[in-house]
Amino acid sequence: MKLIATSEDVNIYCPEGGRFSFFNSPYLAHRTCVGIDVYPRSVFGDVAPSPVRGEVVGIRRVKGSQTKSFEVSSHDYAILLSSSENPERWIKILHIEPLVKIGDAVEPGEDLGTLLRSGFFNFWTDPHIHVEIREPSDPLRARGGFKLERLMELDDTEAAKDLSGIVVESKPEYSLIALNDKFKQGIPAEMEGQIGILDAGIPHYRWFGVHIDTAPPLGGAVRLCGRKIGLVKSVYSNTCLAECSNLLFRANNKPVGLSLYLYPFSNPLVKIIPRKLGELTLEKFEEVCITLS
Image (cartoon, rainbow, N blue to C red; front, side, top):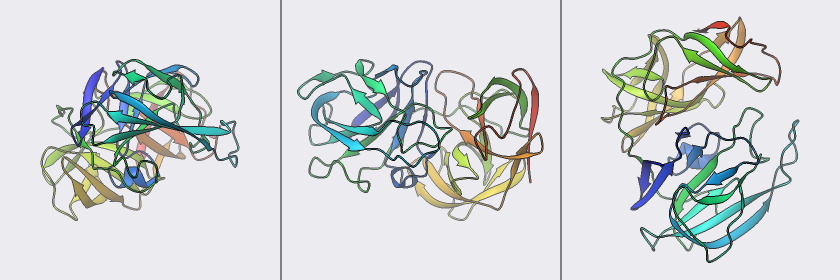
């Protein structure tokens, strides 16, 4: 387990081989930098490792959305833990069917529950653990929660100039591309003379995050492959939120979305998302060039 983020002296970890995201989601907690999604290298139904340490103080089963065109769970769960590092804070965890019970103590990496395909997901959403740090008096609302700070250091020093690569996985929901240019932790963009790592579902969420070392000016441009993709609207510690410019990504001449994460353990991959399930067919080991207009 690698320490990746913190809030209110509560530490959050990512399992070996996994990845994480602050902003790659349409939900409010991610837009306001109070939610983090930790993606184990797992499939739905696998056992999820706890990303935090604490004692289970509550388990709430909630009804899931049934309006999806693909199969999802009929329910979701909110697991509440009292933090062992800061007993004045609780931790809210979503999208896990618990194997723990109230009163159990868990450490990072210990079995927490099984990964659900929640009705809150899109068809391209991979299994993950959603984490928020909360006041004990207000643990469950969609609003609320404390701001997060990334702890993982950034090492990439040059912005991406090209988005060409090889398909390493392909299925109807999405394809994964290993770029020809190798980066260390994510896809780097340029912003006002410094390099930041994109944390994004673009352009479909209409906004995206950038992980940085030095706070950029509000209204500053974010550029990918030399093209402006957005303007900075909010700054949170060592991250910022940008509003998408009017842009379009294409792969094999079909409009696509890109899903981008931070990778603590391995070279990053680019997830290519079709506009409709099954609309884009790519072959494994095929060369692909993602263009931006």
